[in-house]
Length: 255
Image (cartoon, rainbow, N blue to C red):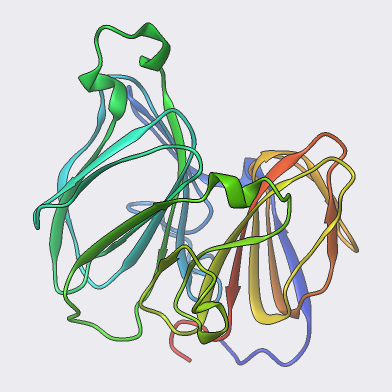
């Protein structure tokens, strides 16, 4: 991929995403993933995976390995239980930031939390979440896990730094990732209250819930993503409210 020299905006519509559907999983991939491969759609900046997953009750991803990847999971509805081979476990729900550093190697499972709850019908529901992978600064790190609730911070309606390795957000991001050039923000956009995108060589804006309108782009619907290069500062509004995930990246894979 050539170095970025001019601003560019590309809208990747929800309906154009690659899809994996089995009896218990509905997964939509913004980039090449698994057996879905498109050489022209492998990543943007440092973001390698942006999977929009819905997992039915009593189901989930059984224990499987990862290596040399920073994995951030953001739950939109329901709850997800995480267990890994180095003794970490946690229940992830809306408003909770979670990161797993795969490092030199880790095994973990992720399941709809309702598989453990038989006496509460309200919790026996699908879990809907977005899982994102970015490459770490270096390989072979010690695996790690971190989670923190950020629900109150999201009430402002503005962009909240959720996961970052950037020095600019050292004292503000809820959790840290092992990449000094990447930060993930979330905004629960208040109706008719604009937010402004940060300036960065690479931005990835994902509409996780609701609809929004971006300056210079137009209407965006749930599942749409906007990939920007050498850009930022655009305003985003929503008439009825929306939840946005924004990756700010100051380098790219391989460069």
